[in-house]
Length: 423
Image (cartoon, rainbow, N blue to C red; front, top):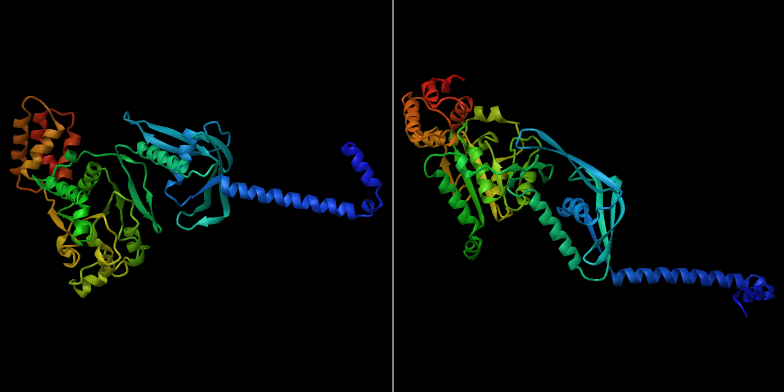
């Protein structure tokens, strides 16, 4: 008997036709459907592996770029990210980066097919980033988690390669750090000419600190280091920190203490979650608040400018909740305005005065800008002519003067020294 004959005989059966047979078939179909759903859930639980990457995770953008370049090149559903890069010729190049858009994508990696689902919650915002909440979910056959470890590591290496030889700047955005602008070409440390021995002293101290974490741990000493660069404006304090970050292959976290939205709690949180291998730069620290030794009139002048207190900064720098492995640079034009508690050892471990140009700096800067057979003689004569004026001059003034005369005859550079103080 065939299946069609069997069904026809069931239709002629009075009990089946009365409804009990139809009920039995419906019940069987429901049980079969539920059984298949349970089997699918069981299969996904034991024979498939899923990874969810939220947009707040640092690897989120790395993963999207990696999927585009390595895994899902043939996908037809894309989103665009437009950026601008300045070429060596001075022209600005527009770059379009295509990343997988929201939806489902299929890719092949490590001998395994992987389903990529990018979802966006239009009604849910990431409070830290101020953008719709997004996730990328990866689903693959098998139980080996290493496939995702390898994938994320490749994505990280790809991201690092794009910033190789560059310095990343970060700024505080609400309660997190975000890259500021495009990564910058690393500035050579030798391009910032400080007085003899100062640059080497600071850079050697930083390198010694970075290489001796175990020494600090064994002796129970907090593993952090603070530096203070003080002196007149335009003498290279901030420029040196930028060049030093390039020398150490570190990024820079720019922290504006005078921001009205900054308070003690936010300051402490930002210092504790600063990206790894970065220098935290607090520029013009004297402008953040007044010293406890200032007069009432001076305190009244600064009242209400910000919400950061001195005690809040002191606790953030070396309180019980302060982070480890941190390098902090502070700069100021007025050392006498700083509270003694802020610059004591433990908070500031090395202080250096970055002042107006000395003979050594004048000669070194001249030799960096010009060349020729009589370069040493011209450099010495240039330094003599500047020092004869008995007027202080900053490296910024010297550099600006050289930029004006970059194509001039060297004798003309020597003959127009008075132009240094015109502006």
